[in-house]
Length: 201
Ligand SMILES: N[C@@H](CCC(=O)N[C@@H](CS)C(=O)NCC(=O)O)C(=O)O
Image (cartoon, rainbow, N blue to C red; front, side, top):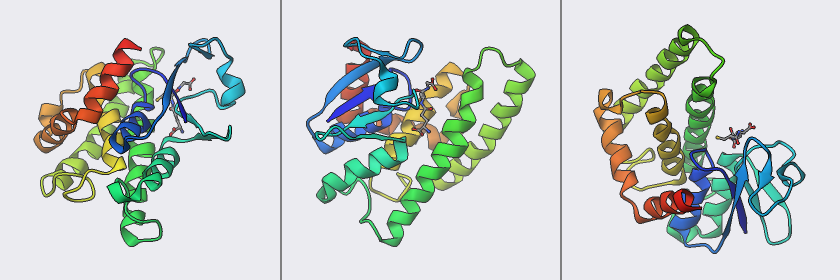
């Protein structure tokens, strides 16, 4: 499998999951500005949507959309329980979290990366994000991970998007349970390895 990624982006989530699962994979860096891969190919021919993450399978098929990719990966090694069994109620809960992270936090953060947006507009999106963080704070005060006491692919994704707070001057100390959660996930060997690989790649 090949994971097309760009540093500091949402592709870190499937990257962490690949390492948590111990699956063999190749990393291919994408320049999100030029849409060229580091090995000189046109990324738009691999993923016409033009964004990471994209996972290329052994048979050449390309899977996109972070929430779909991480569930596909988790199901390759179900014994590691990074996702509850497909068809179970807990799997629906996982999908609920992945949707929340995708639409409310990931997409909700996107305007804060936009240099053309005024500070006033950014403050609107910041405040909106803070409401979602307050919800996370209440949830994480009662449990170690989003689904309970076991790390799941939703945690890889939430860790990834919370990491962007450093670019937005958002201090996570305002949500202590969220910060504890973030710091604990940062210590995981798979997370450290993924961050290191992206830093040197
Ligand atoms: N709907 C996609 C969005 C992926 C996405 O937002 N990718 C960003 C990085 S976090 C990207 O590559 N943007 C480059 C672009 O849109 O040109 C998903 O959830 O996986």
